[in-house]
Image (cartoon, rainbow, N blue to C red; front, side, top):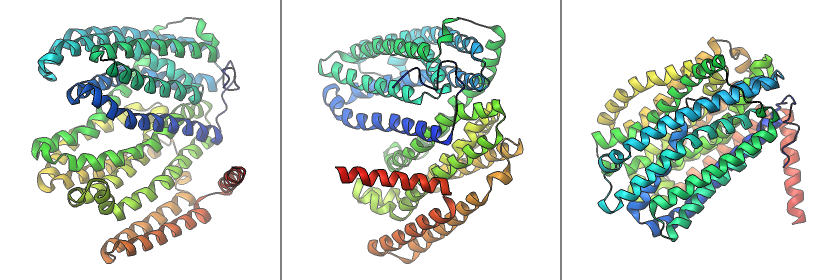
Length: 518
């Protein structure tokens, strides 16, 4: 893996479909590997730390992660403006963007760190209500985290620069090793009985090492960074764009998880598991769109700077198409076999209580996954305000609406609320994309998209037919398999274009050849 590749060191970045697919696969691997590692690590950590201590450690992890969301959107802002400069070959202006962003983050990090330091005793005693014998080590852990906040914030600018240069190989290598490192150090500290404060101290020192590695890579990829430059006009431009991103970064997680608190308040915490279990499964669908949108944000920014409307519309449409083709069969299977899956996985009680919830959430997360693309396009096109305003409107309307549904329909009402909110959000985001002529509706709703709409209608009708007319597992399996085969054939002949067919055939030949040699 060479730093001095064709994608760095004073060369205009070429962004093709191949680049987007390759980088998306890097992002996908960068998400899947840590998930597998967490599944393996959790039993070990719980065994050595105990339930309460592990619960506290998970909160401390969350605080370190969430502090990166308080970067005023400057990580992504750095990606956007550096991407535009690279597209226009304005390499000498890159240090001004990077160092202004990094300087703001250092100042913000110090202020947030001092605030966290001052409120740590209150958080430990009043909010977390930590057991007496864990108070001191939890408090000391928060003090260490407060020192790390500037490091965590500035790392988003280092990452943002690499993303602008399309170096998602390096981004995911560093992020994956960072996440694995945090897990390994947590296990190491737990086994050696370092306590929470010892574990957090190791993680903070490790994060400092990661910053040095990121800095080294950034200077290799962009040698112009040696020219330190901070500009007041740039300061204003970055904060204006990043401010709206911050609003979205704060509001969207609230919208995602507020239903859990409302269920506990209006119903009972005792029934929450029947909602969160299927929620946690279908939430993994987001891995696919997130892998793509991370790559598309700098790509869309570059296409806008170059005024290359054709490439922008092509990337937007194909990303939605690929996400649809990957996720729709998953949703179809959940819609048909939700009860069977839950019975095998969690038992008969969850089969009875969570089956419909599972189905509603699956469709809700599918719609939400598609909505990620107009969202990221609006942000990269310089209209993060529209996304933030939609999110704020949702926040004020969704909470009373889903509260009403929970009171009337119970857990199913919460799932239905999630589905309806995702749909309405999608309508507004796509409306803005088409209304502001960022993408032409006529070009978007081409033959391929029309074919996707048609086959999805057929498949949904098939779901209703199977649910109402076939009761045995064997019949449902046969007819579901038949419908999926029809879906695959229809996609091959009417949705996939010739270039994509060539790529699929080439991949299949390589796979068959590899297996023969093995």
